[in-house]
Length: 113
Length: 113
Image (cartoon, rainbow over all chains, first blue to last red; front, side):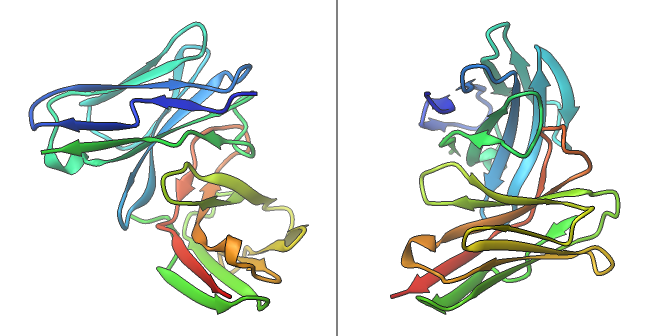
């Protein structure tokens, strides 16, 4: 069974640009969550999608948005990039929304110059 | 407001000895706690969890203890092995049915041969 796949693996953008990150969950998983990891801050929850609906949202500005498609694949978008958005963005999937078995992808490392 | 705190950024132990990683939380509504392990360039992987109705959960070399009155949990690894060297994240949730987890900042464990 394939794991959670995130693309691209690395991304370099400049301030003011926008970026779209992609996540393919484990087959059969309907819940997809996104997290931001920065040094010293741990992992911070961005949002969770379940059956194409946003179910939970973290404390991030509106520049961060996401969506989920009917095949459970998810994308997150960051508009008007700031230097502080440089981080590892992790996607996690699970079966019926339970957090015990959150499976994470390897992440997308975003650098904003 | 850091609701989940791991106050030790790093820990170094000798192979074969016990590793104890600590985590404190402030939100009394949390009722589900998890530990994740992360190697460089990989996503976090689930280690062990505990519900608030229990005070101990064991899985092989890993044991998690929960002290609700002190709002404290700990992960014990016995015996520690060099392959256990990684970053360990404590996480908490108000429900077992959500992809939204509140993570601590992480503790880097180094197990010396």
